[in-house]
Length: 75
Image 1 (cartoon, rainbow, N blue to C red):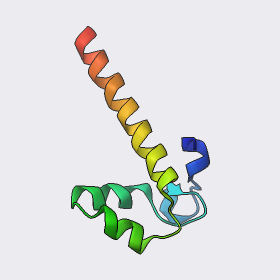
Image 2 (cartoon, one colour):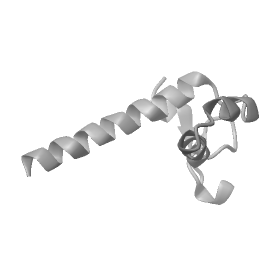
Image 3 (cartoon, rainbow, N blue to C red):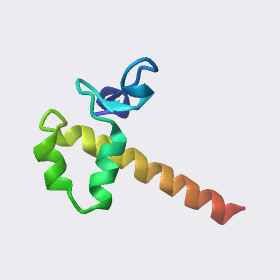
Image 4 (cartoon, helix red, strand yellow):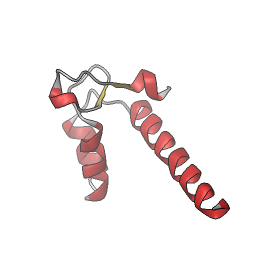
């Protein structure tokens, strides 16, 4: 699943937050749960967010981190 398939955003809905497609669950909610070690609780609380959506977000996040670290090494 691509990031574009996993997410949606509308400036006039959910305060413009980036959300998981087909839900009103902001991506930030996933990161809040991860920060608190509550991934299982995230899936329980938001059953419409499927693992493939979470994987797309985490894969993209990892890619951005790798780019950032690579840029700092070359600077």
